Image: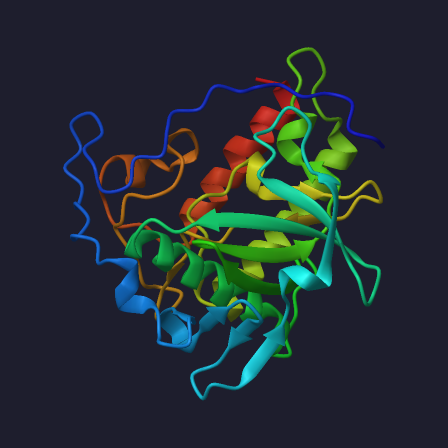
Length: 270
């Protein structure tokens, strides 16, 4: 059904690399200038062997992996009424497909790390032959004017749009949402060995046909095994698991906690 409700839920801010209350969390290293990552040809070199330029994405061997540029796209609107409007709705000239274009402004190597994680997760889902239908589909990326633009399949909204203080999501659709997100997390955890670290309604997208997918992989953490852990303080505080807030090591179960909080919010509207 169409998205009928929107509720501006008050969230505590992201606080990577800073103290939160009595927590002693690791501070970030001094950021390097962007010029350290840009080649003579203008390509922006990222981790994982990726380079992004105005024509798309190149691999470590300088092979063009995905071709996409601003000339390929026609802007036809924006996604998310009441949002900041940072996600553009575009049409691909050749295929006539509708994409969502997400812009990430470059401001230092922390942003480059987020872009690297996002692109490697998205491209890996498409390129490794074990595609999950519960992960947002990646259409390409390009860089221009100090920003990286990431093209994704168009969805109809985020689950945050369905949060309303007077009407919770009914049990049956809530069960379907739970199943879809768990399928996506199972793929990230077991196949890709990734912890998402920011599971919340805003990062869970839906279509009107009932499709639900996980998105936004900028703070993902790669673990060597399903028993490994991490201790970085990133993500959205409201949806953090107790061990994360306590500064302890955490693993894949932290994503399940974030999903649980999201489901309570959807069910109760609070």
